[in-house]
Amino acid sequence: MAEQKYLTYKGLPLVRSGKQIFYGNMSDETVAALQILTTREVNGLQVADKVRVLLMLTNTEGADASETVKKSCERNGLYDALDVAHIWLSRSA
Image (cartoon, rainbow, N blue to C red; front, side, top):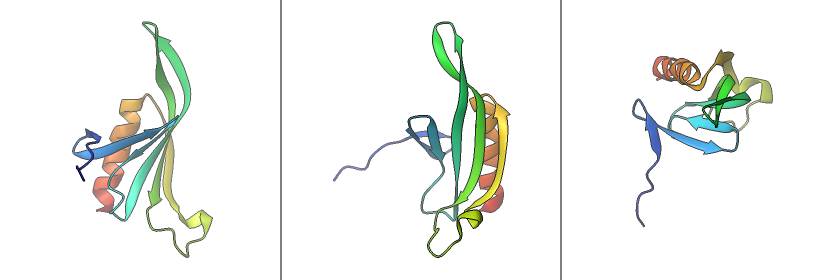
């Protein structure tokens, strides 16, 4: 079976499902979830405006729902949100 290629940002994979983007390796202890809260139009394209960033545990087995999210914040724009997520993932490694 061929290895699936993912879009990456600073060497970590990005996987999108609707208005949710998962950033990081699922084999690591934590992964970032980016939730697009609002969008705006720029040159005819819808781009992310407000984005919530969540640092989450990947192994939630036996964990309480309140323990799965380690950190959270909101940022304006996808690039700012990705930068925060990258810093959090780098520090948690």
